[in-house]
Every structure is written in C-alpha cells, then in structure tokens.
Length: 449
Image 1 (cartoon, helix red, strand yellow):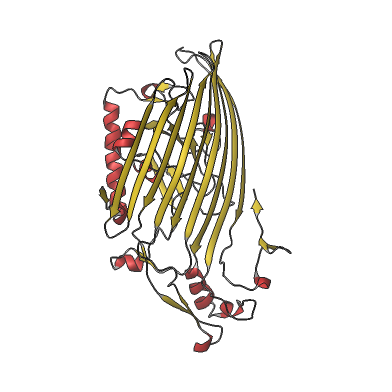
Image 2 (cartoon, rainbow, N blue to C red; image 1 turned 90 degrees about the vertical axis):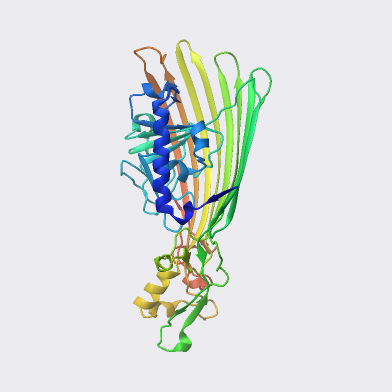
C-alpha cells in the first residue's frame, strides 16, 4: 500500500522526479553494466552508438515505478511534454530540444515532430501519443535530434522507442505485481499486472501480458448554477443551468485495461517468425485542469456543466521475420494499428462569456429547440477520432562487428484519420439549426485525411 501526494503538487513532483530519474540514469552510466540498444536498427552496446541516446532498462523501469508515458518522460532530461488543457491521458504534445508541432488541438494539424515507436511500428498520431501502460518492457530508448534517415516522418526533433520483452524459447517464467494507493484528500487507486512466458516445444514460446489499473481523482466538480441572460432584459427570459447531474468529489479518474501476446517460432538456427497482438482500453472521466479561482482558495476544483470523458481504445497487430542470407541479416516487419478516441469536454464558459455577455444575449435568443423553446445553452466540445495505420519495413544489414558495415532498407506507411469535432454542441437544438449534417440522415459529417 502506498500513499501518493504527487498529484497535489504537480510542479514540485515533476521537478523532483526528473532530478531523481536523471540521477538514477547517471548512476547506470558510471557502472559496469552493459546497456544494449537497437537505436540504429541493429543490436549494439549503448556506449558504442555515436549518436545522442538515452535508455531506461527493465530494472530501472521497475525501480523508478515507471508505468506510463507521463512517468518515463519525467526521467528523461531531453524530453518534455505538455498535456492538452482539461484532457486526460493520450493527448500530450511531446517536446525534444524545445521543438514541437501538432500541438494546437486541431484534427487537421501537422504530425507531431517527435516520433514514437512501439517495437517496430510508428504509433505517432495527430493530437496525441498512445499512452501505453508500461509493464514487461525491455527498455525505453530516446534519440535526440533529427532521426529521419532511419525513422522517417515525425522524427524531426527526435524519436522515442518502447521495446517490449520478447518470448524466450525453452524457458518458463512468470510474474505479477499488485499495488493499492491513495491520494491525500483524493480518491483511491490500484494496479494489477502480470506476465507468463510459456515454452511450446523446443523451438517456440508464447508470452502473455495483462494489466488493469485505476487512478483516483483529486479534482472536485463543485455544485453550482449559472444564469444565462436572454435576448431581452427581463428576468423571465433568463435561463438558469444547474450542474447537479455532474457535480462530484474527486471528479477526474482514469481506468486502463490491456493485454499483449507474442509468439516466437524458430524455423531453424537462422530464421525466426514473431507474430504479436496487443490492445488497450483507457477511459478517463472528469476534468484534468482546475480553475485558478479555486486554486487560489486552496482547492483543486472546477464548476463544469456538461459531461466530460475520454475513451481511448486501440489494438495493434504485428509480424516480424528475422533471418540470414549469407553474411547479411534480413528483417521484415509488418504492423497494423487501429485507434478510436471518443471524448467530450465542457465548453460552457465559452458560450457564457462570449455568446451571452459579449453579445448581450443576442445569440442565445436565437438558439431554439424543435418546440420553439430555449434549450440548455451550456455547450460541450465533442472530439471523436478514428485512426488506421499500417507500416511495412524491409532491411538488410551487414555484419555489425566489421569496421565497414552498412544497412539498406525500404519503408512504407499509410495512415488514415477520420474525425468529427462539433464545437459548441448544444443538446436539444432544433434540427433546422444543426450545422455540418448529412441530409437526409441528420448525421454529423465526417472529414477524412
């Protein structure tokens, strides 16, 4: 059982964690332990790699209790992140060397400038990274600076690689971890995770990994009301909204469930095939930002009037073939990623301060329901995204022990992004006032890039 206070002091916690992480990594570099990396698409001792690289291995990941994206970023001095305001997991902009793109929250923005890889597949998507729960991970590698030669698009500022543990042939192993935690003046949480490595004969093995976590909240959604003025200066024309349906203590929570499976088959002494599959379902509720007025009063709280959530579901399928042709090593990797994000955030501050006060209630008076009455003017911002991403890579490399060595590779990637983002969504608005609808179905139109 552990008690965590980091969420109550986010700035101080981030600084202390970064100092502790850098000190721990520095200790590794002064020891005799050999750190093996694959940053240059070949297995090498990190001390022999002539590029700027940081790596956190399995042992250090466990010692530092690193379990997600936010955790490992704090331990890397060359990496920083900025979460989107009010959003939960999976919406962070990643900075390396002070460079970032794609951080404006728009679905049609450019790709991020820091690429993220899960094993052999790029998992970089517009608006946010995959917030993979880190368990049974071999290491996290960070390559600072332009990496376009080996990692292509979205690696102008650097590349982050998450390397999972692979099945081990001829060896049974298993493990699990359980944790309960609580936040001072906040909610409770837990972590349950485990793995098993199963030998299947003399030349194959199956590795299964699973996890389920819950993070307690610490931001309250306070009960409140708000009066929206009408288009006439009479009290009878005003509209009062009440957030009783959404007011809650410890408003922001995060539940994550996921699994991974990999099968290694050794065809002979030179050729192996490794199919893999993994998925994760992550749901955050509430707001992950607080109002400054409440913060000044010593409270982490908001007064929001619409339902707030983010549901991030994804799965990945992969196939890796490794072998030798003469003195050359050949590797093929094919991967497919499908990600769906459905989210909704409170937008009522905008509708109140602009539509009503700035416009003196003029626009509010124009919003009607099908019966000709006035609907609840408190707005929400809906963000629904669907990603499909496939990649294929074939590379041929010479003997890495030779002084003269080379690598020849071919890479193909295709990404699709379907999205819908209704700003200022008003529940109960008249059908005739709905914008961006496909007739006659009435469904919100979808853009495709």
